[in-house]
Length: 100
Image (tube, rainbow, N blue to C red; front, side):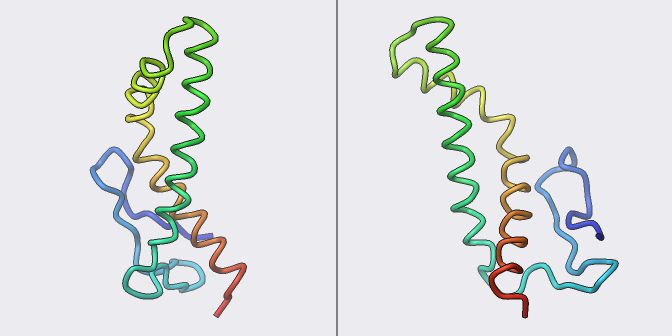
């Protein structure tokens, strides 16, 4: 129920709170805890870039290489949001698998 991130995404890299203000859950259980979140972030980014590429190809019929490069450029502003979202997904996934 409490906030996971202490500051807004528009104030630099997302700084996480150490614990939940409501239940006291420690967000980062150990050093390197969010390594799994990187895999989630990679999957989300790849999916978004694929969708952007397909949309670009549908409207403009550019070659594949140009579609992918433009799709990556379009994705760049979404990267901080995807990073935060992947950390939240990782926390939920980890708590479902190993609640202790």
